[in-house]
Length: 245
Length: 55
Image (cartoon, rainbow over all chains, first blue to last red; front, side):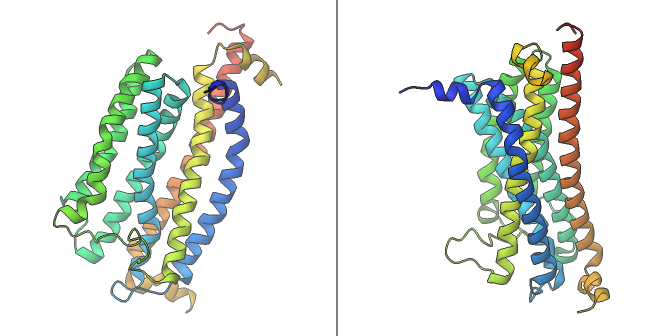
């Protein structure tokens, strides 16, 4: 099989230009979908029969929690590709993803706390779901701290990639924690394929937010990736032509 | 439903609005942080080019 297309695709100049061209095409739909999803969730969706209007936190909490895991999975896959095939662009993708994932994890924890207080009567409980999500935040922060602490970029890439890959074991723990252990946290709402335990007019804004946040991550990651490529390629000849245009 | 009722969120206003505010802040901040990061890296690269490729 001919792999030249992959090398072209993963070459820094090509990736830099492609990321620049793609970012707005992902970012603007993300923005539009966030507006639509928030309007649907906070205005149009009917109040919950048990939690009243308080359930609307769902529309920012669940997508944030989803992204905290999706971004980590993406980061770990990119890190693994970087480790195995020594593709520097993959390490750059992982590095560009970490801060975004950390923000989503923090948002999931904070909005969960704000939701827990009125519904459970407590801001925080050391149960499996909340604790494993907190560990996820520490994994992101640890990944970023490890990168920042190693001057040599290749060594930083490899060391942080190992941490990212090992940390993946935490993802199934987070997801299944509500089934494996006794918890205050409610179970899955929409992942039960074909039979979601939520009505359609509550569901569509939620799905819209999931899609919106995923696209949002793509757009922000592409911009961060460009910065990452510039820093790595600062002495490359293509940069001369690219920036002098 | 009038605006006052909407803002009250059935008594959950102090939990719902800070949640929304925090997430919107995080979304906006991340866009600006990423753009600033790219602008800084670009300026740095241009500075190096102007200096003849030396730091």
